[in-house]
Image: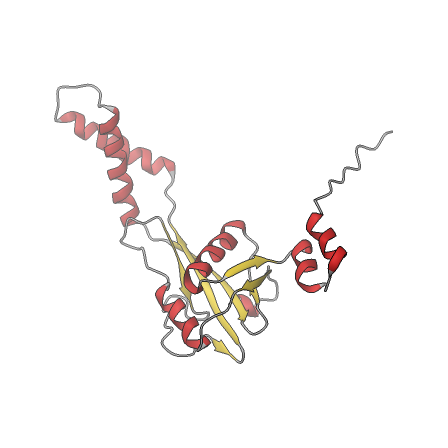
Length: 209
């Protein structure tokens, strides 16, 4: 469980929007509707969904396991399958030779090759298990804050997409600009200046001997 790890990565978000009352029921419904879907014995390559810290392979949102005081604690689980190209090529060439053996031809058409490739990938993806990755998060709806225990690009993008689908709320990532916008209390001309700010490029150049 990442929350108890001595070392961790963290991304902070601002949650934009409001949940319908009762809030706990709204969150539970969003979690249940987008719980992780198992893809072992399935041709799907990737599955993204919610689960519970501590029991990530047996998610159950029927109770209040995700409620800790005024916070909601749950996890994003991403299951992915990966096939080595050498394995794919081995099965593909075997399938091509098998198809040719039943004909008098020496070559297959482009469409036939694509059909064989798709069939090989389908059969292989059904047979291999998915590798799970699990990322915990803490959401404080009253404060509008969310802490996501990862800064991996793909994980953060999957979180933002799934969170929007599940709760019809937007996540705004907190970095220096958004931190200044939300938390600095700027008003008037200072706020206008922040809106007009653009990134600065610093280049110290190469040191001369």
